[in-house]
Length: 261
Length: 319
Image (cartoon, rainbow over all chains, first blue to last red; front, side):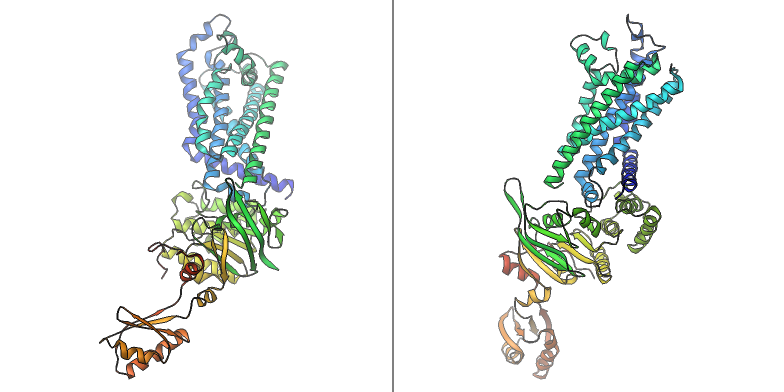
């Protein structure tokens, strides 16, 4: 198969995965519903956090929280993608794909393409929610587009982790069991609260958590202006997580193929 | 050239479980070959090796002329696979599945769409094509699975237990489709645990038990090894002794059972009518008559020491 044919296969597998997510509420809910609810609860419940000394200058807590909601959604999209892949393995659908003359890694890339689409959708969703409820994007349309790009790339990076765990274990329940871990990682980052206002040791963990760099890269266009440092740190973190996750996926896939699906 | 060849094929799983133990196979092009054996006999593992889903730990195999390990891509292009328990996504529609399968096999979009429509019609699923597969009956699932395996017109079709759990009508529909495909020149390799499926569909049957092929031939020749068919005759007024004298002219009398006269027929079913006529001429009235053919289960029992199907496990034969 040539490159165009391979891209078509990845596109078809991606489209199938997107439809699968849209048709299975338990896969879609974590991507949209849970982050939306958390956004609503936190914005209304602890909105006065913006009055704390040293809290970043924002127009409102919603502006600060948008990036957190987006990154939470992409993490959960990666987890949902992993669950869906594990379900495919459990029900034998992956065998159908492996018996076809396609590059083996297209199975993972198709899944990641779908996660990217869902990531972009999530970014647009939270931008719309934010704008409807009064958030302001300081960097305007270019800033919003950059946010969508960061969120989409993050979804691919996190999707790789979900795929790696799914391929390694082949069990949806294991991938689903990692769901609470997503929240631990999120709360140990600057997704929902500025790291410099956290207590130790959470503050130190959050400061060096790659997720914080990504969150700040997504947040900067909303609350201030995106600096080169923000941009590089965010892109660097996404690249690092993406490279590791795709490498782990490749190893897990190779192992699964060696053992026979 | 053989469509499928395997030499000393072996597959060991962790814990030193030998699932396939030195299987030799040769399936000619255009043949229907049935792999008959109970659950856990090694049928599915063999199919997974032949369809490139699993690497053998020893031995070699070629499908459509290509090595299943070193030329796996070519094998995948040449084969169609319908797996056990139909590996289908319940959230996809039938049409989506076949179109996806067409894309996976590199068919251009228009050709894939045309092919999908033709196959949906062929398996009588046009009306259900836009329904999610999760709403399909067992028979419909097998039909859509079969259709998806045919989208690229494979030279060799692998069907892993294609009718397990199906009702008689659905089984018959699958059998008819397999027969048609074979008539069109497709080599079919199917696994089954149903005796009559192997008996009715297959040109040749390989009986597998504990990972080894214990017998292989045409169903007729395998059964012939078990002896000739015998006739069980229940006479109206008893008369077993006189009946035995009459039927002895047609073959070897067997010890009577439950008041019935038993005779092993030299020329099989062709002698049933002459036997009935001879009994009539002797003034004996036949109350019931049964021609009992040796079954593949008899073969299985003779070769493995145990029955393939526990009593009551076999599905009802399609009408």
